[in-house]
Length: 249
Image (tube, rainbow, N blue to C red; front, side):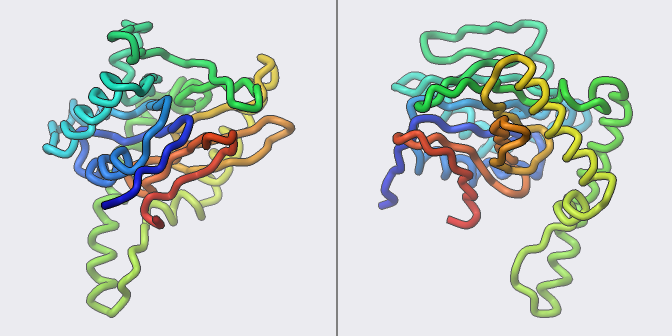
């Protein structure tokens, strides 16, 4: 029997339930393995964009929703910060569902060291999403294509004896100069906004790249995603911040 790990708070983002690429089964396993006082869902948990194109909803997607609701009914405070893919929730926020489930556009979080964090999905700080939604949607199609190609590439790798999984989409994101520049700009803009508004740090998602680092005196934490990397940010019971890479457990 797997021993449950207890932490103070868990932050996850970019699960994209409603798409065939969502690693809902792995997330369900993670939620069984980790218990927390607080669970923050930092946007793009449900992919409304993809559902409009083609409805895909597996049983594991429902299981994740049910697991989160069970945690809220018991002892976990659940906070849902809407992202651009689940923006259909934004016109209705704040939404309070019982004593332990709240939906907002952004929130504040105070850690055990009394640092104040802005918790936001992050799309408001992405100039493409905010000013050229058609281009963001086109990019979403392109990302889906690369995710499809991952399967083809890894089938070929297995034929030639390579067993380790390799992600073409992650390689493109991490290697193409324009992508690297976009990520760097995104992180810097978020840090600047946090500093201007007297925050000590920012917790976000959106770009599917898990990270903990300091930017100009601001602690920048990105949750990553549950489409490829299966990562989460946690604050431990003694106030440490960590990235959990569930695929490397």
